Image 1 (cartoon, one colour):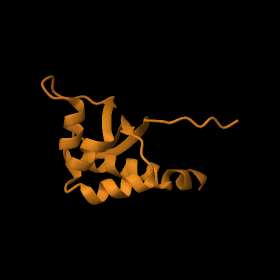
Image 2 (cartoon, rainbow, N blue to C red; image 1 turned 90 degrees about the vertical axis):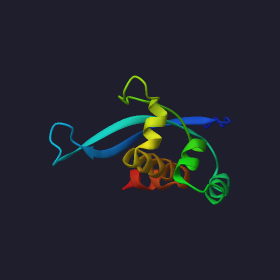
Image 3 (cartoon, helix red, strand yellow; image 1 turned 45 degrees about the vertical axis):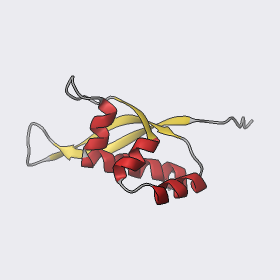
Amino acid sequence: MLNLTEVQSFWRTVRVTVPDSKNPDKVKEAKFLAKFRMMNRDEMIELTNETETEKDFLDEILLDVKEVECPPDMDAVEGVKANPITAKAVVETYTSVITGAERKNLRK
């Protein structure tokens, strides 16, 4: 049975390739959890057209993160937004979910 409820947010795993802190010449795969604001495609298109920077977009969609280590004086969400590698991965993960690409990729 399908139970349609108004979902305000959702969690997804964000996968990212980052420099290896033990060997700077190499990279490693990492992942963390991100809590996103739910919106439909029309709302996302409107938001995309209204936001001038990637950070503005992230300010609107990224609500929380888990499994992110950062310095004690840094907020984890702000750290993810400020890092170009993680910021890009967050945007890609979110757009994949909202546009339906995530479901298409799972079927392959």
